[in-house]
Every structure is written in C-alpha cells, then in structure tokens.
Image (tube, rainbow, N blue to C red; front, top):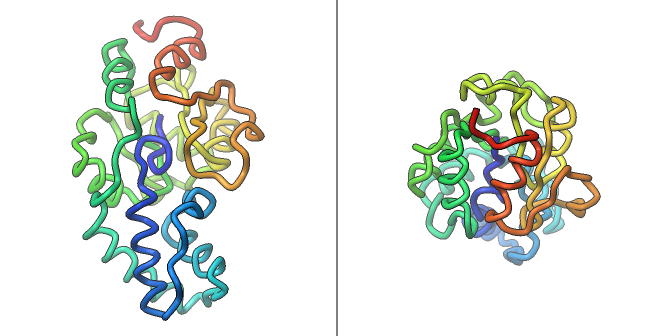
Length: 221
C-alpha cells in the first residue's frame, strides 16, 4: 500500500500553486515552495487551513468551506502541470509486480483527485485498488483505511506493507499492525526518523528489497 502525495508523486508544485492562487486573490503574498513539506499531507482542507494560518490569516469554517470548492476547481485543472513521480517509482512498482505483489494506493487525498492525477501520469493501471479518504470508513491514521485498501486489492494483511512519508501513514500502519516503510523525501512536519519506521529509504530502488525483508521472504508465493 502506498501513500500518494509525497510518497509516490511530488505533488507540492501544483498543490502549492493552487494555494498561492487563492492567497493572491485575498491580496496575500505567496508562500515559498520550501514550506510545502510541512503543510501538505492531511488533505486539501488541512492545506488551506495551514496555508492561510502560515500567512497570518486563519480561516473561519464558513470561509474554509467557500475556499475549498475554489481550491478543488483550480487544482483539478492543474493537477499534473508540474507533479511527477519520484525518481525510481515506476521501476520499483514494475519490479514489485513482477515479484507477485498486489499494489494499492491508500491516501487521504480524495479518490477522484487521486484517480485524475494517477491517470494523468499513466500510473493508475499499476494499482489493484485506489482508496482515498472518502472511500474508506475513516481516513488514516484509522487502520480501517489500510484494511479497506488491502481487501479491495485482494491482498492479505499478514503479507501487507505500508509505504508512506508522514505521521498519518506511520500511525495507520501501527494501528493496523502492518510493517512500515517511510521515505525520507516526503511531506511531514515531524522528522521522519522520529516516526520510527521499520525501514527508512532514501530512494525507490531500495523498496523491493525492503518489502521482501518485511514480509520475511520473497514476495512471490
């Protein structure tokens, strides 16, 4: 199971681009790109709240609701302008599949947005299930998000591995009692080593071996 933003795909340019468009409409200076990694990771509403708060303009619930619709409209139109898979992602997915793995996306991004992004990048066909927060009983860190993704992919929880970048991924994996791989280059406001993954990787070329180690044998059964 893979998280999406900050794990499979570098989505910060388009997410921050949309946030900065909305900030500009309110006469607020754009936020620098290097703030993305601490703002992204809990969905669009959280990004809006964090972004406007970081700019010194906290949002009311009513204003957040209004801005959310504007955010989605703009983001959908620009969802893959600059977003790209991280280096080594495609090769790692192909190798895992060749070893017998079933792949799933388990993301707090909405399912329709996730599908649109993955379709635009030519990645969606590699996954047996793509489960956004809206398609699960509750979003990560609730373990039911992970177990729903496993079930829809036709997988087994005793052979599952969660690959992510943030606290919500780490807590979901622990809550579901699933081994955890974290990437060092994703979006998190907590140092990734402090999340205590079973394995921390710096590049996707290390992922197939990490997964094999965590399930205790080669992936093919």
